[in-house]
Image (cartoon, rainbow, N blue to C red; front, side, top):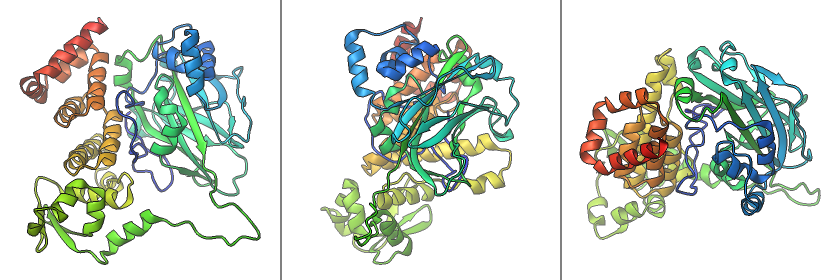
Length: 456
């Protein structure tokens, strides 16, 4: 997409920047292309019963073998919360909804868009809303905005999850994922819980989602748009309060180690090591750094520690804002956010330039994470890079993937190239950095040729 942006609340900067480790391999970039293979309503209902792993990946095949069916039913444990269908630019009211117990803490709903080209006639800022569905005792719906939610996102399609309860007495805290039906690995409960931030849906912030779910021109040129149709899946997991009410028990506040360590970093109390990066100095704590990074362990407590026990440690080939983000992750284990709101104010109307700056920051953070052996941060950066592959970034991302031995990220880049039209490929290959790839990494060219041959 593909830039994830929560539309309201405290975490608006980057909703897709997620902090957590997750499985390697093909589990990458669910929203990169922004759409799935086209599925009929019947096939969506089949997917709801556990067949989505096979039928979605097959691009809408009619069915699966009995063995595959049993396997998929076993792994697809999230309850089904119905289907909404958009046909000819309007919501079809005959589709099903509210098919699960209202008290179920997790569930998913499918939004089928039949006739994508007709939805493009909807003006910028206007939405088509799905039928309401129940998850966790709350009413929800999906907002689909074919031409973006604002003038700044007019080249994108926006998608949001909306809390539809009439009265919200207290915030509803939930993990959610808006993805494509053929990316089943992004829809498993463990993935949703571990790799997405929990958001508070309240009267002031009823909708969260992605301003840039996908960019329309790239999506329309890809093979993902099959028969002018695609399907969006909304997974929701309600967060249960870990404090059980008991009138006879003394409530003990839960510790917040992340907040405590972050406060330690910000106040610099007890800091015993200083770094200088691009002219800026950073104070930190040796034990914290060493506990989180084998590289810092060797640097600060290993045989070469003599050179770091006194004075300031110089960090070369890294920007200060990247090192600051690196420290933030070390102390909090959360994916850091680049300050972007200020840049948006200063460069009003320059959305693409801001995006390029942010993406370069993520790429630099990816390199820094690999340099200091912070695998959790590296995997999170890899997730974000997968979700933001486009014509302008694919070559630089592909180079990074090859340099830092990230097979999954490389496969996503090659898959993206395979899905492009011939004109888009010509544009990509006309760039100067493509020549650098072919000269430095000829094996990548061979892999791409093999993928294009399979496409033909």
